[in-house]
Length: 116
Image (cartoon, rainbow, N blue to C red):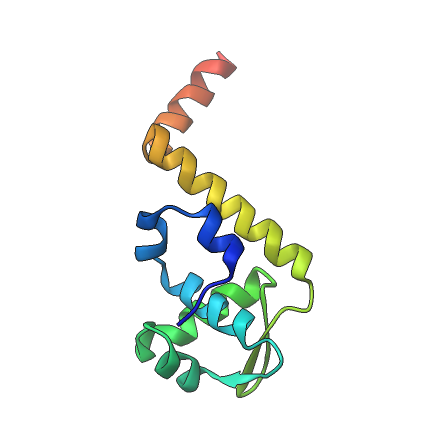
């Protein structure tokens, strides 16, 4: 499997080695954006387990990053939206790496204290 040169230049070795299932699915669909695919075929051509591919694709569809016409899946035509989602994901991972994962309970407590 290949990656585009921007991803190669912008990501660390750790990020490239630890892609999530949605990243694998999106990368595959991006690299093959001239076609629509059945979920089972996407799973077969990526590391995403077949029993996980439908939930992954459904979440991506809710985020408007993929399109679905049963039984086929394709990348969104809105590549700006895709780039924004990728940039947001990359920045979030960078902040998590620098400052640690966010603790929801800490956020709630801090917001309650701010209201007082």
